[in-house]
Image (cartoon, rainbow, N blue to C red; front, side, top):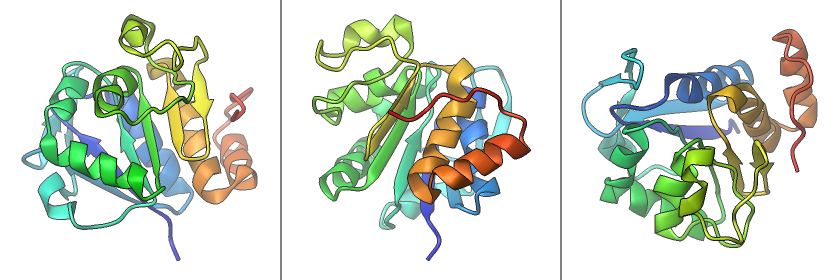
Amino acid sequence: MAKTVLTVLAEGFEEIEAIAPIDVLRRADVDVTVASLEGLMVKGARGISVQADMTLAEVAGRTFDLIVIPGGMPGAANLAASALLGDMLKKQRAEGRAIAAICAAPAVVLHPLGLLGDEKTSCHPAFRRRLDEINCTEERLCAGEKLITAAGPGVAMDFALALVELLKGKRKADELAKAMLVEGRCCAN
């Protein structure tokens, strides 16, 4: 059975943090659904518009192996303001399924929902002060069994490969890294 991933976009998302995981996961034959908070066209923080597959409301009843939350501002703040997304993330965590977030999203979206537990959490340095001390780390990538977080745009490819490793195994992630000429990728913790 194919692994399923939901990537959620909101106006002002960081483009590379969304597109790199979508692209790499699809290369790994993962079924990725891109959903937006509203409307199918979503403009990123750098003015690049991306077409979502559907709206978040349309996928709200579905179950995904992984939910991916890109950062960027005001994208992360817009995602944090979505009660529907908050409910979906809480259910995802409660049911033991994986969540991944990058850049501002771990601090702006996941932390206020109480979804970080006592796990070390990577996020953009500008947002670390929003995390609890137990979560703070300067690591660029933190990959747990059900939570993967990364520091920002420069880590997007390592983040994407960590998601592949979580869903499809290290062998598949290494195979993709080699095929895409990604050298010295970060190792999962």
